[in-house]
Image 1: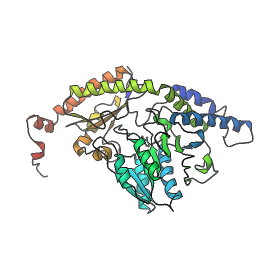
Image 2 (image 1 turned 120 degrees about the vertical axis):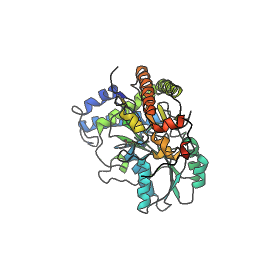
Image 3 (image 1 turned 90 degrees about the horizontal axis):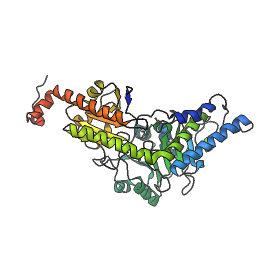
Length: 405
Ligand SMILES: *Cc1c(COP(=O)(O)O)cnc(C)c1O
């Protein structure tokens, strides 16, 4: 078995060789600009882009005219929030979102707030990280123009009741944006059934290339309008100017096609692997806690807190497995994960959490190796931990008076 093992598929995914194969001709041979309307080079590029648009639209049950290409989900989130606030400022300026959204949504909302362009309600989530649709309903005011709630969380994998939220948005005539970056290609997504008006996702989370994303923008019932955030040639129906990255778009299309064909089988395979990983670790080690929803979560996600163990120390001792800790996300600072904190997980357990992200190219052998190594390292770190020793001796750690220094 080759080391290191990649178990961080929520941060990015390796590209599928079939995707690369589809992309290759579009770098050198077929290099045309899809906006060149008057020669064969342009027509060839445009045809490839339109084909990719269809493949992408099919995966989410949209029309290919509703696909707007961006540089990634971060840009899509920015375009959705800023574009709606700017376009509908006469109607209102209130956004409803949640505390566990990705930074691309939260920081955009904060930025709009700081500049005085929007007021934002940040809904709290339950202990599993789920948004309550009734909380969304209660937060709506006559100034609300946008609801932005993610499909599935990137740390804990919890899947939100998006369909119910979409229904409320429709009832009230408010636009619904969904950051579906972790869900698209992994679980069924249907923008019609889910009542989604705008949706962000990205190729590199589904075995496609980095640097290409989509903002789905509903064309009818209702026809959604957004103010462009990039001025230029008026590409993408005026919503996002800039020469299209044809090879990346072709790769994105192929990646969606593969997901569409293999998602069901792949989801079952990954869920089985994930369940084995979870059982293997949690049965062998006491005081381990699952973060996120026990059932309503992404098939390839597992997030566990290992009491008395520092997540970062754990990862230091485990260099041959690529994982992510609940303190590493905002890497420069060692803040505990704001997502786990929003679930009510204490700062200690948040710091001791590890996210496992399985993917298309992981094997059972890698899972077995990971179980074995996790048990070894957690056991060793706990043996060295005075806190763990005290807890084992029955000392109530909360009652300890620590000496000041
Ligand atoms: C990765 C991710 C993003 C950012 O996507 P990029 O394409 O890397 O900009 C946004 N939202 C969620 C939920 C993500 O997981």
